[in-house]
Amino acid sequence: MKRRVNGNILKVIVMFAALAAAVFCLYKAAGRMGSNQEAESLKQLDTSIRKAMMTCYATEGVYPPTIQYLKDNYGVQVDETRFVVFYEVFWENMMPDITVMERQD
Image 1: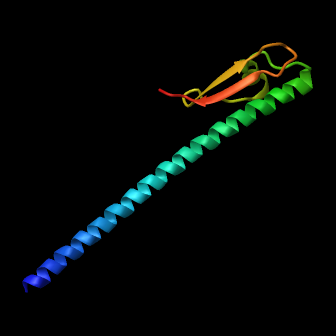
Image 2: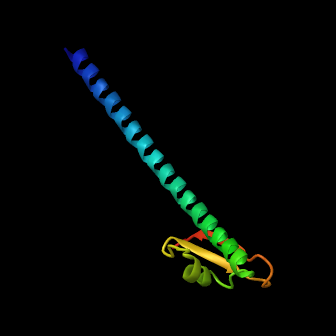
């Protein structure tokens, strides 16, 4: 009888450990999915800004002077709670340097 009780306790412990491992794996997978989604959003924003910049150049013959110009005239939308955009113009006739980064608060 004592042997039977110890066997049941062992089964419960093994089942609990398996459940804990499964929950941990799901938690890690969800974290990876979230970071992949953030990376994709960042890439899409960068692509959107570059396309709008090239459209401006093709239409107006000059690169946009600021990121705000792209927002006002070409429909670029930046979620400033999540991302920060560095837009540096060196010369009017040279393509601006664009850096899009996740906001670190």
